[in-house]
Amino acid sequence: MDTTINTARPGQQGSGRAVIKTKFTNPGWGSSNSLSLSTSDVRCDTALPGSTRKAGCVNSGYTPEMVYSKSGPYPELAKHIEHGQNAKNLPGKHGTNRFLTRLTDKEKRKANQKKACPPSLPRPPGKSCDEYPFASTWQGASTGGGDFSRRMINARQNSKGGSALNNFYTYNRIIEKDRFLVWIKP
Image (cartoon, rainbow, N blue to C red; front, side):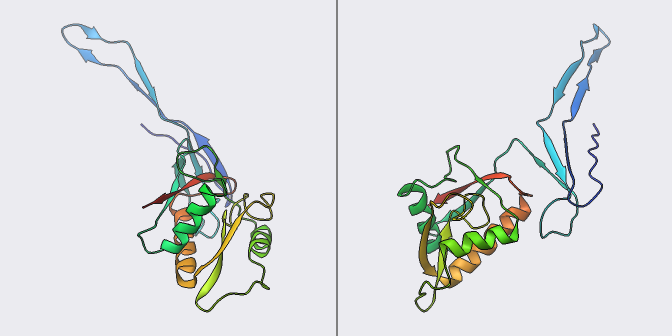
C-alpha cells in the first residue's frame, strides 16, 4: 500500500485516503472476490505554526485531547480549567462536542490575552493571570464573544502549563481552526 498526498509549499495542506484491495487465492477453490478496505481521512500539511515547516500527517477524524491533572505538575492550572468548564460551562470539556479551535493569528491571540488579563490587573507575588478558554483559541476572551474565566495562579505552573499546551499543538499538528478538547483528570 502506498499513498501520496502532495503538499509542496510551506503552509499548504492536502488530504487523502488509502485504499487496500486484496484478493485471496487457494489452489483448491481458486480466487476470492476482491476485498477493499479504506483508511479514515488523513490530512498532510506543511502548515504547522512555529515548526520547522516539515511535512507531517494526522488522522483528520481524530479529535486530540490535551490532558492536565489536578495531581500533576500544574494543579492550579488544572483546577482553574475545570472550574471554567464546569461552573461557567465554557467549551472544550472532555466527553463533549463543544470543541476549542486553534487560533494562530498573533494579534488576535494578544487581544484575547489583553481582554482576559489586562496589564492593569494586579498580580500578587508569585502569581500570574491565567485565562480559559486559552488565548490561542477562537473561543478566547476577545474572539469568542467575551465568555471566559480568569484566575491568578502560580506563575511557574501557568508558564509551564502553557508550554505543555504548545507542545501538544506541535505533537498533534494542530493548525488553524483544528478542533481539540481538554481533559482534566484527578
